[in-house]
Amino acid sequence: MSLGPITQGSTRPIWSFTLVQDDNTPFVLTGATFTGVLYSRPNARAITMTPGSFTITSASLGTFTYTPATGDVAEPGEWEIEIAVVIGAQPVYVRDHVTIVERYAP
Image (cartoon, rainbow, N blue to C red; front, side):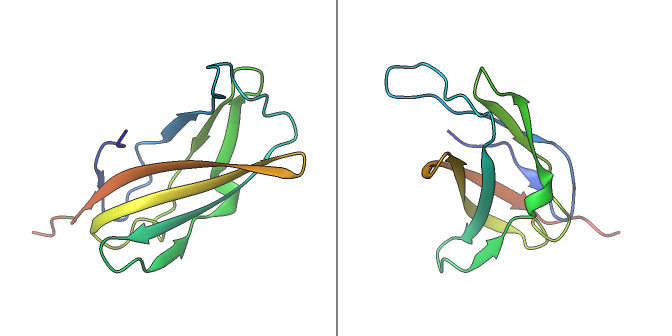
């Protein structure tokens, strides 16, 4: 899966995720906490995603969103996303890809 491209420094679009188990049932996100890191390609430089920008949209359906902060998407390029969702004591990882497109400045 790949998130659609986002313009450098933009806070939109909001990224949506659904966390499902191997049997395709959703993880229940009640009480879950989130931490995320963006890794640049190809050198794997890491940027910690803004923690206050995660929102559970439906705990029972395993859905949550992330609203990018301008500093999270300040550098154009190809990025891998890794989000740790901690439910109880066990983290579950969400991985994705995003392209940050350079902002055009006339």
